View 1 (cartoon, one colour):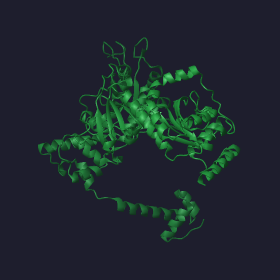
View 2 (cartoon, rainbow, N blue to C red):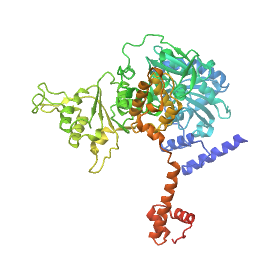
View 3 (tube, rainbow, N blue to C red):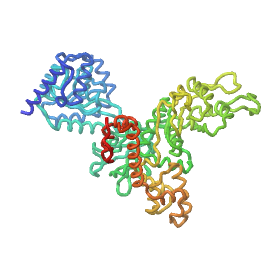
View 4 (cartoon, rainbow, N blue to C red):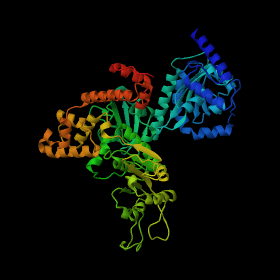
Length: 630
């Protein structure tokens, strides 16, 4: 009865969509409706038939050769799905363009399905076959079931199809696995069956792709290790270079994490000591997984790809830099990964945030994890350079360019950054006259040193930073509008320390990083957690370093070791209740004054206060005053 009702609803939905181009909510699932709209935009008629042409035998042979690894590693999963998917089913493997590479299943159903071109060599992308499981799964990027009349074209309604995309360890779509059957045969577990088969395929693909890497296996259940449902992570050194879908989901990773994140960004400890004696790893998110580490099976390539180049980190970063690195939360790490990929593509990055939030630490990490890690990192504080020197220091000069110039000239910071990253801190303090010269350099990629006869080519990635918003209009703008849009092609805003929800956990981690032994006393931790930290991570790192030194060998920390401003802030009474009363009294006085000033006219008083008239009526009544007039 339910099936009959569903068919009637779909018939009604198709009629409404044909006539009005719209369907009432609930009649059709949103992914199907989105696909119908895409097909309508292509000019397709629901009563028509597919438009795609079958590939020739030669084209099919070439497509199969291009996807040889996918086809070979999919064979066991297709056979398994064929056995478990029912006697009347047809298992189909397509490439990333929706072209059918192979099929296996019931011959009688295969012959009927061939009437709608469900066979090797047929394209089943939406542009060729309308709404269907293979094509719609490719567009939507997720598992999809299309049943009967949910297919856009009338002839295809004889099918019920369930399709799941197949992705590699870098998140790229390789193809789709589909199980099609007669529309009258609906299995509630069909999508789970196809999903399990795709897990097996992706597991085999991952193992084959990362023979030369260390592979970390994770699962919430120890017995799940080694099975297709486990999470897989591949590391080259300690650099994350591959992750399967389950690992991405478990750790909340995006594809941009690959080639950027290190083991320590994801887990406590080091890769060499993973897993621990209990066979577990501790994720930075707090989750604990059963784990197994497989060392590289073959020697890594002599010359790895640039995107997977192992970064060169400073040997002894400053204490505040160490604190900044350790303090990167998941959101900041995600922003860093995106910024790395964008800067590698030549996109300029602007970092915004209060003093001490780690803008330079972020920029140095971007450099260390980018394709330019082997090149220089040149940091310029535009606010620290005297205005009389900033031009010569940035752009350089030739011998004898001006009185007092060094005999051998000066290469200039822009040229020193060639092949690496140029970091312009406090870009808003650069003199406007020099901003036009910098803009020309960014546009032409050439520097004209003072006194030089011809410009010199430069190649660097640009990262700028500011502690204040850079308004890009008006006469008082700190940065020219044309330069602003050139340096802020992608903006990252770093949150202040006081905005961290996990501040206590961060305090404990940074204190442990000092090598200070015992944990901080509860009283000290409470005081530090409640402080506002106007200097952010730089200030926090200095305070923790001071406590560590004062504690000495005993490791004992007491309240008197805290800076006076932190002790004073903790000793001040909490103003919350008094402030609430004061604010309410101020609001009440403002209402009375506004009503008096407008002779009791509530509408006029509300306009003056910027509140709705009904709000003012309620407050005036609560105060026991005159109701006024409108």
